[in-house]
Image (cartoon, rainbow, N blue to C red):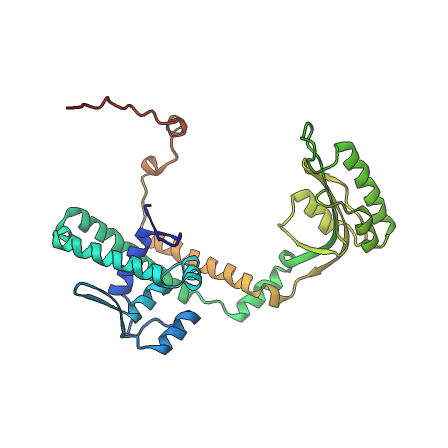
Length: 332
């Protein structure tokens, strides 16, 4: 997509902004003629200080009200809204003016009667309708506290945590330049064995960490850290959740470092800490299920030959650098 770069260094996809502006102007009010149901805190404060009908942008005969701009802001991505909160609304106002001026110029040349305009209007209309439909599906896909509790009770294994005291030793690559952090492979193995013996002996974790810690080379945890299922490589996860409390894992060679740990304890995280995660997961399941049902209802068909993966020859052509032939310029 082509991008419009704002003077303050903030990039925004022009096509998305145009679509959102169109949504804000043409469909800025929800069903029943009401304005946006909820404004961001910054927008809410601004709305309280002035009238929603206040004109904030003018271009020719076109006026844009504060409520229309607020509706536009609500349609932006969270990243764009964050940028607005830190940089102010002026870049958005400048871009809005640019769109209005260019649209008026297009009308003066009757470009709204061109085939290109009609084709783009069809595409944008579909995008806007799809966005509104998706928002409605999200609204209807609410998750109840009972559903969250049931999921948590049935999937407690997924939220179990192992508290481990970990040691990591960086290995210096062979042939590395002088000053490269790390130990040689043999030095790393010897150091790992020393620390591992201290873990097995039950030495004080704080003293062990202080004794063997080497900045940017050796890290030994003085306090246990939590790790959840799915966050470690398979062999390390197996050790973290199958070893008994107090046992020490084997040394795992990750190529660039040696890693091992002592299992201090295990626990299941509390529901309050994972409820939002469960809610998002269950909502996504409901939305995906609704979308699949809509696809079946619509009797969707896709030409797999056209939309299929590119052939090997096509992939090779795409990966090859383009050869540009330049004809000699003709000077008169």
